[in-house]
Length: 257
Picture 1: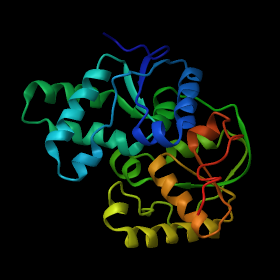
Picture 2: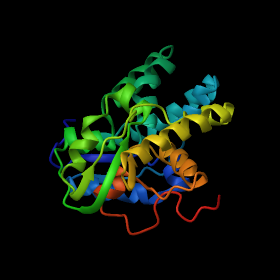
Picture 3: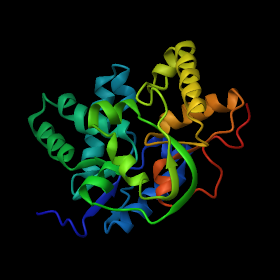
Picture 4: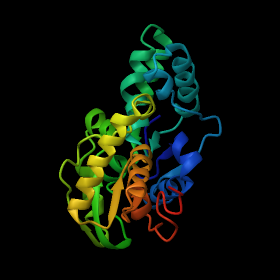
């Protein structure tokens, strides 16, 4: 069935962190996709993409989760998610994970072709432009998976350029890892904390009052370090700013140290 570019049917993959820690990112994603002309649905059978299991070497549980997600989303024109990390798993690792099962390998490849990270999808596929305003200076953190696995770099910056009143100030080392790395921050907490502190130093040096990014894991990690170091920089997922959903507390605000 051909895909309708003017009114595509999109399955939104919410991601675990959005569901459990920042539902407003999911609501912002729905709003943005609908503004772009998409028909958005959220499959109720979706669960984790399997990345934590995959990164920990638990291939069998990761394969089971991959099959469940493929079955939930393969009938949509597109799968879209507000996370380069989860999309990297689906696009880059599902086909390899299922390579020994020809039927599932084919289904994994087909879904990978139609799976997109939210910001790149809005910019490249739907040619959407924002109509919101954000009065302040922001700096942008490039998440490792989105940048290195999916080539997401200029797409969010092009979208942010259309936000009225927003001034983008590039920080030094914007493409350096923040130390989250999924299970990395749990396995190597001291190294992770040092990396997060270096990222905070780059944010402070930029002079921006707000930090944006496209992966909630990175943003939760950095906001936690900002709080512990007594910094007042606000943190939002880029989708929240593009959708004008910044009246609520920023990521980490109100959290005890």
